[in-house]
Length: 461
Picture (spheres, rainbow, N blue to C red):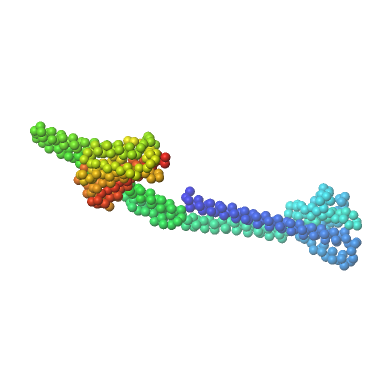
């Protein structure tokens, strides 16, 4: 069932329940009031009956005449009886059958006033004493006029209920349509979004209601998806280019070498060139494998307590082996007095790869003879590593893509590399609830800031 139909039925059902209860309450209290009012009128008839029949010998002629006039103001279908307490009938008026048994007379004597119903007929029994003895007065009547009005009220309530229900269903249908119009609009806009149209966004995201909040969240998700698709596209194109280049070079070298017989030195040169290309392919394969490993579920990674400054020293030693002509100037001036604040919780192998990549990048892009500045520090909840070089720098437009695998800034494409280091580092740090940021100015240098949570505040990603 569609939401619109469900809302309409729910709206109509709630209104029908309220209207039914309202109608029943009106009918019940109207019927109760009519019954009590008519009992009071019949009770007054018993008083008129007593004055006319039993007090006639006790009052003057004028009073008797007045009592007689009041007595003959009869109610519809009225029947009256006067009994002695032993059951003897001494007065009767009115046509019809009125079942008066001895147990009713006894009940009236005990309770003094009794009201009951026989079908539509209402009966009042009243105990009365005077100088002639003890009597039971029975008066009954049918409230025909009020019963007709009550029946008419019932018809009005039923017709009004059905008419109101029809109006409510129609109004609920229109109301549901109006209420769901923003959702319908969102659905129609979402249907237009495909993998090739991820730049489209939902228009109803500026309001303050729940649907606007949903549209805003959906737009944020589309932003992430668009970024992911762009990164995937860049990754595929760059990866295919990086893999194709050494393979093409290897195939070309082999084809040229096989065109005619060569001297042993020439074959040696070809093999040496192919070895270098094969090493490049190995580095690429290892880099891709490391990125895949850094993207696995963090629950499958083993974490241990590590000293961050010791990690940096280990990474520095490995970076020196790879870039022997670079000097790393490590600054300890901002180390905290409490050594526990340098403790981090993580996977040693992965963190070592991340820090080595940062240090090696700085060394690779620094001019010969210029040291790389390394600062270790800590604040209240994090440890920080700031690595600064005085190299070529990165253009502002390129900074947005430094964490895209295989992306390389335009001004450093003549330097050997694959564009895997920083993306790999970012993924490793995310697994450890850390972060990395890059700040750079062309021809002045680049600063990379790595942060990790201290061990006591660490929660695995």
